[in-house]
Image 1 (cartoon, rainbow, N blue to C red):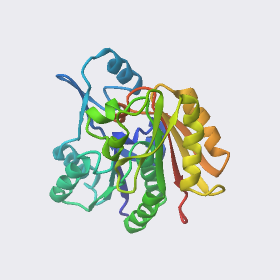
Image 2: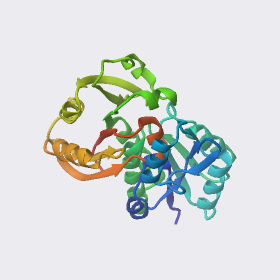
Image 3: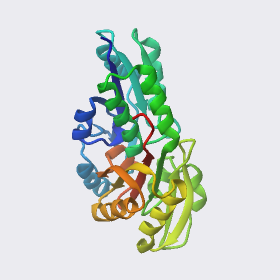
Length: 285
C-alpha cells in the first residue's frame, strides 16, 4: 500500500516528541556566525543559539537547504513508491520553497511542495496535522485539501523587544513603518495572509504586550472556536506560558503547548520575543 510521507523544515521549531509522534521528516536550514555554519536544530539548540547571539558582535545570517539536500530526502522517502508532501516556511521569508521546488522537478516519485505562508509553530501545526492524517492512511489528495484549509486559518501574532534583527536580516516586511518608534513602545506584529511580517499595533511598555496579543487573537478568531494554540518565546518562557493561558481562556482548546523559538527564526526576532500561534481546527481532521 502506498503511504504518504510528510516533510517540513526546521523553521517549524518542532519538538522531538512532535516529530516522532507525527512521523515527520525535518530538513534543517543553516545558521551562519561569520565563517561558522550550523544546522538549525541539529548542531545548535535554541539555548546555544541565544548564548552565541549575545556574545557575538556580528548579526548571524541564515540560508536555505540546497536543492540537492531536498532531492536526497525525496528520493529516499519515495524509494518504495511512497508519495511525498513537503510543507515549508513562507516563500516570502525564505528561499526554502525554491530549493524544494527545484528538487521536486528532479525527483522521480510523486512529490508535492506546499507553501504554508507561515513559520514557526504555524508551520508546525500544518505539518503535524498532515502527519497525523498520513498515519491514519488518508490519501495524498485528502491531506493536501486539509492543509490548504488550515493555511488561511492559522494566525501568528507576536512582539519583539527590538526591530533591529528583523531589519538587519531583511525580513521586516511591512513593519518597516514602525522603525524609529518612541522609546519603550513595543510593536505588535503579524504574519499576514501573504506570509509577510506586517505591523498590527504598538503598545507602551512590556506589561501591555500580553493583553494586546490576546485581544489581537480574538480579533482574528471568534471566542469559543475550537482551536490549537502554541505560545513561542526567545528566552521568555514565563511570559509565553502566561500568554498561552490567557489566550486559552477564550477558546475550546484542543491542543496547546509552549515552544522556544529556534535558531533560524531567532536570527530575525532576537531575544525577548514572544508570540501566539492559533489555528482553527478543521472539519474532518
